[in-house]
Image (cartoon, rainbow, N blue to C red; front, side, top):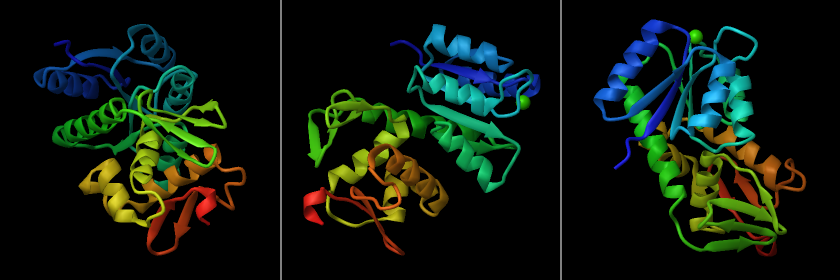
Length: 232
Ligand code: CA
């Protein structure tokens, strides 16, 4: 079996060494990039299975820029690293297309757990059969992608996973905790900001008017549900 390849994008050599040593010990193959341009190039040519991406990088591209560029050609899972802790940074990371977020300093165990969780949910997202329709939306499980009125809509792996979980139980209210546990893992059950950022991003992609959603309906204080417009 081929070892999964992880691209580590970070300019601090101490962190690169720590991360690489531990990833290799877990059986992953690794590849490094010390700046944004190199990171985009390696993501395109080496086709990694996952990317660990620091936000603060030397040169003209920061981690957000790198993430946005990679998202123009790849759905590879991306975990962003940063020393910053403000909520706006987290939201900007998700808006740039990151799948998860880890704040420095982090423990190696935490990083490995996040990698496994991200790979698990994106891997599952790629193996489910058939498809399901909601109004003009068609969620294609085979290709793990979304079509609206026959037009393909680009979703990140985590956006797809979130929509997929809601599609499994349509027209039912799913609690914030339930969705967070299913998509991000039980450690994230209270991270409502994650969920809110992703729901907003999904609505921008699938709703005619994201402020008056027809498909992803909020039940304040309870959760969200995916409905066919006919059910409203
Ligand atoms: Ca850095």
